Image (cartoon, rainbow, N blue to C red; front, side, top):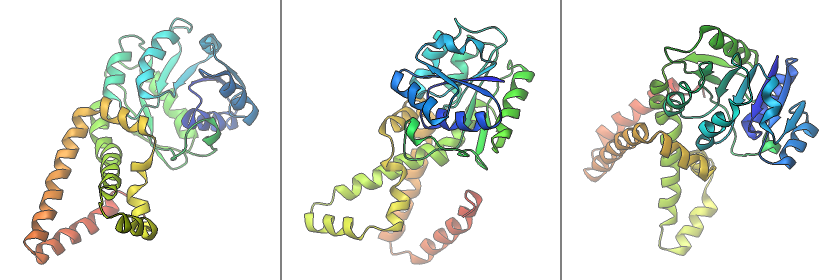
Amino acid sequence: MNIGILGLGLIGGSLGYDLRSQGHHVLGVSRRESTCQTAVALGSVDEASVEMSLLAAADIIFICTPIALIVPQVEQLITYISAATIITDVGSVKAPIVKAISPLWSRFVGGHPMAGTADSGIEAAQKNLFVDRPYVITPDATTPKDAIAILEEIVRSLGCKVYHCQPEQHDRAVSWISHLPVMVSAALIAACMDETDSEVLQLAQNLASSGFRDTSRVGGGNPELGVMMARYNRQALLRSLQQYRQNLDEFIHLIEQEDWTTLDTKLESTQQARPLFTDE
């Protein structure tokens, strides 16, 4: 197939590598000419341009821009493509995206690969990024079945585990396991930096090891992505943050009351629950 990628960063570039390895002809579009040249040189895409007209020949197009640009880019893109073209996106928030684009383009299928690294840009792109990772497809009631099937076939060829759900269900789920952790992790770093004794702060920084590294990682990521999560998944994230605050208050209360028995029970419960979310 001719497959278009609009936005040649970590996700777009990585998609390009794997799609080309499957034998597809990959067309890339980026805002910067230098990114286009790098993507071709690295072998992420076959052709690249700053002009959207390059995507006129694509059978399916992946929108891999930041969340705020997805809808505006689609509005521009649809003036260049045929009515048979499938458009999909990789945004980490789905309900507002699906709601905005579905009336504009009948063959739009929302999607979200749950993969990534702390790095960004075409240079960070890597092969096999999506192997064994979840890929969520979020069609609505009007999404053509053949468009869904084609996207699913492509996604499965990348080695992904495919899940289908409603856009709103997706946003509530990722608020728990993706967006809330970013805010909690960022708050942890901010709280540590509030230490008023400079010697203690320096000592903490020197002693920080795997525990702090694991819990602070996502809070030290791309600030733009964190803001976009909060802005476009605001209600679900607020609900998750408020529930988290209630649990944090409960821990504070148990420690204040020196209720070690209940605290032990609580920690046993969380110990047993963690494997439900991760295979570590």
